[in-house]
Image (cartoon, rainbow, N blue to C red; front, side):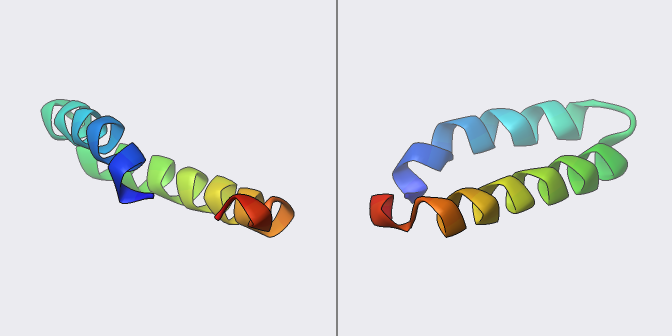
Amino acid sequence: MTLHLDQPLTLWLAVVSSSSAGPKVALLTGICALSAYLFYVMFYPEKF
């Protein structure tokens, strides 16, 4: 799973750290990504 996340995560971190509203954006997108991931895992457990 980490293999697929590495590149987008690095890109996302670069965008977040370069933006002025970094912490707020990071928190918001982090929460959204985590809830989407948990939702996906709950409904499609056979893929993991």
